[in-house]
Image (cartoon, rainbow, N blue to C red; front, side):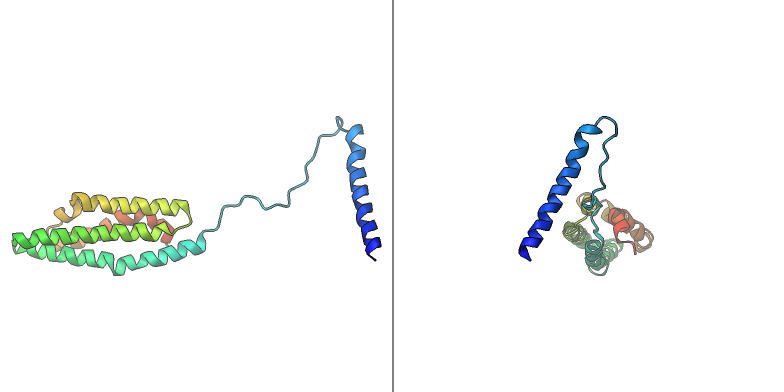
Length: 170
């Protein structure tokens, strides 16, 4: 049985070699070379869906923890401003700024786990926007009333989070 199998394999190799060799000299100039389609998988884009979903799930806690804490810090700041409590205003501004830095850190840390390089870059962009607001205290300084906070906070969150929002939209 073993000899028969070896004979079949050897015969197949000889026939294959002869078939390839027989055309080489006679029709080389007459017919254009054709290539057989490759059975190797094409370089399709990697599927980041599962990983992106995991990262987005982690980012969702941003709304229930870090952004909520920032909103609370802003509420305290506004209360102190309205009461003209200067010492407390300074502390509350520092607290709000610290909360913003924590928002940026959360975005940066969570999106660092993204396998999709574009999503990871979007996370860095969002974190940089939040960091810039924390550094210059622009948003913290401009919101002076609860009415202004309520009317601007949603759009501010959208501005900060817009780079990652497209990846986490359900």
